[in-house]
Amino acid sequence: MQDSDEKAATRRRARMAGFVKATLFGGLIFLLPLGLIGYLVGKAVGLAVTAGEPVFRLLPHTAFWLAMIPLLALVALIVLALLAGLFARTKTGMRFLDWVETSLFGGVPQYQFMKSMAEGVAKMESGPGWQPVLVAGAAGWRIGFIVEAVNADWAAVFLPQSPSATVGEVVICPTSTLRAIPDSMAHVTAILKRMGLGSAEALQSVDLSLPGQVALPISEDVPGRDRPAV
View 1: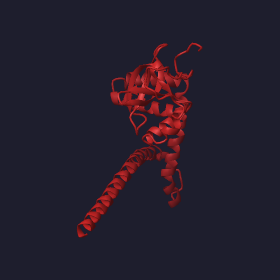
View 2 (view 1 turned 180 degrees about the vertical axis):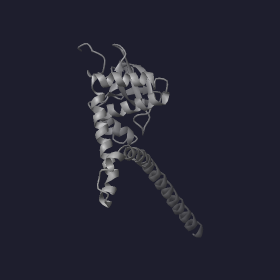
View 3 (view 1 turned 90 degrees about the vertical axis):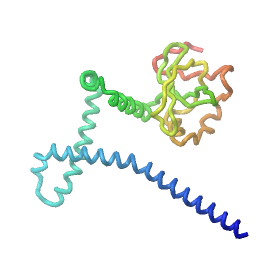
View 4 (view 1 turned 45 degrees about the horizontal axis):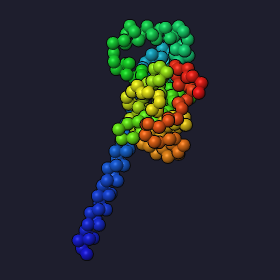
């Protein structure tokens, strides 16, 4: 009886230790990106305060206005970013950005990597996005997104690595082996971030039989391809 009680107590301690460890690591994973964002924003605000010092000198030298300087610098950064975004949408802005990337950052792989990540996130967060599909793999089906059509029969497919939706690999697949997922890119991305939770609802109408049978048709909205009428 005493041995069973000791074993039960040991199991409870092990579960408690596991709970504390998992909670600690979960908290660190949650706080790390927030800390990085806070650090970068703090650095940017500090630079804005330094750059705007001639203007801030014109403000009344009271405790209230001195405390408002970082907030004003942050607002100025937001306005500057909006203006830069509007300028980047113009033809002149696009030509300038192309020149900067080619002349200054063309040989910096880290810049190209960060740019690709940002473009991928922007694509996922705005508009209809890419066509979600299932791609046959050695262990079954993998969730992916058709990025663009290569030709009438092949497509470039991005295969994210869950729980990230922006890190993965690109494969060139025959479209006849793909299964279209009748859901939005945003919802499928959320499923990936939740490590597959919600797949049952999204895939309930999808044919999950392995390749060799007739595949469901891919959406007509595949970028870069005009599919013939069925």
